[in-house]
Length: 395
Image 1 (spheres, rainbow, N blue to C red):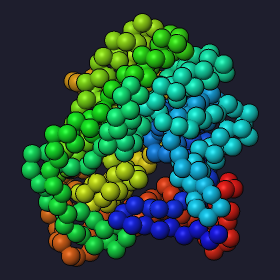
Image 2 (image 1 turned 90 degrees about the vertical axis):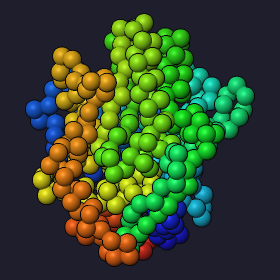
Image 3 (image 1 turned 180 degrees about the vertical axis):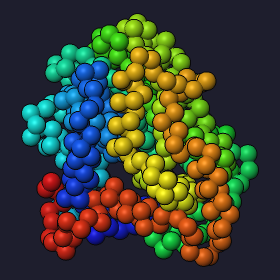
Image 4 (image 1 turned 45 degrees about the vertical axis):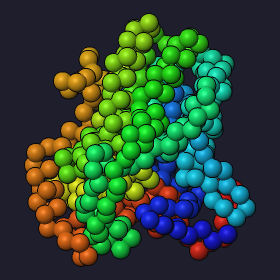
């Protein structure tokens, strides 16, 4: 079939297997260029990534693999392809990464299934026990729209909504580049509760507790979950909204998990990462407009980082390579430090004030936003002929 990108309401419905493979190869090429002078002795050699098929999770597999020849296990939920329907980008990217790891003689395996379930946790621990014995690092990078409780079978669904009152703000139609105005109704108490159940720290804690009981976490191991704060302009929709409540819960649970890991002299951290174009961020009102402005400012200042560059810096300059992990007053790793610089935020806010509903976005990196959104689904690469007939089942 001829695979084209189909986008509906800022959501891509298709992915291209060859393009997803190119995305992975580009991340590997970046790391290959950074190898010289990087101390790799302290990097983890056995890594579990819960939610490791795309975005920060995928980069968290690639960095230790390429820099330190680490063995990695991914847990993610993916839609597999059919003869006439493409798979999720994560399915193709995971397959491409594991193929590249295999070329280098390195171990890389995945468990596809519901990461919230007891069955997947058990299967993951069994695999670690059999092939790796233990893991030195557990990354929690799960992004899911729903969670089924293993005990009660109750289904919780996350929502992206403000809390307390409806919220109206400017945003961006990423296909046309037009500034639009969006209004979202406030969340109910039940929706806030359910979003925290899905996207908060409860499941991260459950994973660590189970893996500890199984004895598959190595002495001195670390666990890191990814979060985001952002500027005040995004607070009503993000930090003060349903997602923000979930992230607060994640950060609160980090202290409990840190205590759990003391059993093996380990540590737990939340890493606050930079705003990036992802499948999730593209559908959060306000965020696409903010990111398009942010990218342009950071690129002008030559401090822009994409996903792999962020995780490279996180691993080599924050988690490892220092005697103590540098954290803020709340114990969080702030790898969003460049984004949140005063000069960056002041310039983004200046540009935000220029935007008008119904007009094209001004002084923004619309092209970069669109290109990155294409790339995370395997489209927009000059080296790939998108007119060729492709079997979506082949990678």
